[in-house]
Structure formats: C-alpha cells, structure tokens
Length: 192
Image (cartoon, rainbow, N blue to C red):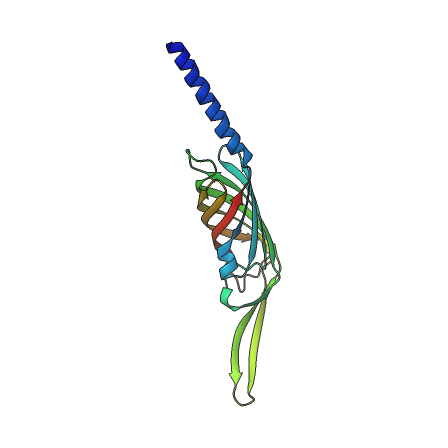
C-alpha cells in the first residue's frame, strides 16, 4: 500500500511538473514599448524579447524619432533619428521564469539628426518672432548596461522598470553632447 502511494505521488508530481514546464515553454516571446520615451521624448519604441532557458533572453529594440537620452527633450522641433539596440538579459529570480530583477549588457547603433529650438524671442520694433534652431547629429555606436525589474500579470501582461547607461564609441558630436548617455524605461508589453 505504501509503495502504491509513493508511486502515485511520484506520477502526480511528474505530470504536474511536465504541465508547468510545457506552459512555460509555450510562452517564448514578448513584445513591449517604452512608455516613458513616448511621453518624455516623443520617441516610438518597439521591443521584441525571445525568452530562452535558464532565465535568460535575447532582446532587440527599435526606436523611431529617437533622441540622445532625454537631452533637449522639451525643445525638440524634429528628429529623424532611428536606433537599433540588442541586449542579452539575465534574470536573477530562482522562483519565477523571466521575471523579477534583471541585468543586461547592450549594444546600440543610431543614425540621424535632431533639430532643437535654440532660442526664441519677439522683436517689438519689427513685430516679428525670431527663432533660432540648432541641428546636431546623434549618429553613432554605443555600448553599456542596464538593470531593471519585471512583473508579469496573468502570465500575459508585462510591466518593467529599468535604467541604463551607455558610452558612445566612434564618431559623435562631442562639442554639444557628452559621451555618456543615460536612459530610463517604463515598459508595457505582452507575452505570448
């Protein structure tokens, strides 16, 4: 009787473990967007994350109408910059799959220019507005890292907060911009 109970218990635990691992393996993809970039800088961000085994993932993100960090975010007239970023994410949670605290090294390539309103004044003598614009190139290559925390709601909706820092490597407009770029994220996504 005791051996039958042990065999049934082992069989039941094996079945439940197989079911949970199948459920985890079914959800291997995630798409998201950085809402903070959209609100602060007006950049449209689309990210794809491929979930791998052992709480690791591969990340690719594209940003349209990109800026240099949040530099001049309130004065941007126009931007045609596009960036592509890749990262390898390492999750540190031992109890949850692809959730919790994470760290990632990243590489980013960006191309384009940003036009900002340098100054504006109204000339009362001629009754005209005088605007001066400044254009700078944000094209270049950067490498850095980031940290964050991710929550998964109902096994589908994903919310993550992150911060990252990157150093520019290569040709870059260092007269106006610094070599270090910091960015933050409030990402909302869907896991499937």
